[in-house]
Length: 431
Image 1 (tube, rainbow, N blue to C red):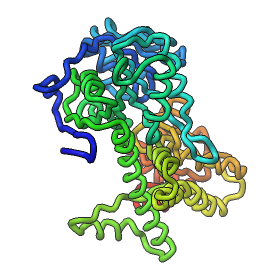
Image 2: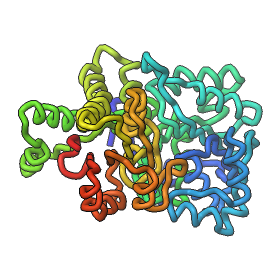
Image 3: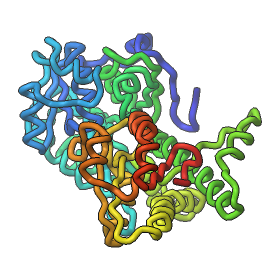
Image 4: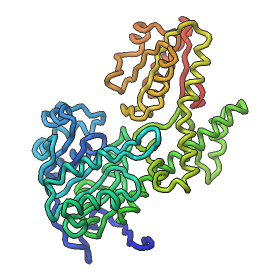
């Protein structure tokens, strides 16, 4: 496969080091900057496959829990890795970096509010933290999702100012992550990997980081193409969710359940409309499209319109709940679901959290629980119902176990005069 200026090769993990490839220095000591949702699983897999890994994080409690093996991870495969012999021998967590053959940067890139511009402060802090430990021959591999031209306009000048020529003195690569919360282990191992580099040695040496565990294919490209690829993937998904949400809003105006119409439309062999919902959360979809808008606002009209459609869906859901609460005088509301999607504990940019906050701002008394989120967890649904004595129960996130538990309590709730509003069960935007 070719691009206009650079060859983009498809190579499996076993293809590294073939005829014509550059001779690569080994990558045995790896420093992972940021041991959160992305960095920690990578550090665990690398350590389990014999690499010496230092995981760096500013959260001292997280560092301590990694080192003493008391960290609770929400995926069984990752939790099991924490206590394997290789991980216990090869993984050390620290609050400061140290020397290494490679530095993998895996820190967040949030948005500034209200102008929706990328905040590169965490990336810049990560670069500054590793500068004292950089030596000629080292590799910097950025896993963080970053705006287009960040490598060229931020990272390269930083390295040059530090006295390093990228591609000559140190290697520079960008390999954006492709994982789904709740299925991190399988996706980290099985998904294809796109690796952009400032030169061929950077690309190939970055690939050697993943080679011990990767089962997916590897695509090699340039830095800008790798930056754009990740943003395009998530923007594609965001735009298609927005289309489904707009269909649902049209259906509401015409007084018809568009979920049934979407199902019929999807019988067409070339149509695959997604399901609408109360909003789009997580770390990627609500953020990444704005990075493209920052780079080229003139040509992102569709992208930003889609983003605004998805951003307004929590307000649409909140208004539906308000209408349902209008028949109650000073109601007690019991809300279930805080994660941004079913069966995960990730609350980043969660529509459910926004809905609860808006209801509380309106003056409603809302008790909020989520079986997967530690600070909102509960033992069992009947005990919560007895303790809170709600007038209205709102299911915001259709966790399978929550849906089943509410179904088993439905007749008892009806006898007690408790209204039950459930999003995401039949018509996804209609409780």
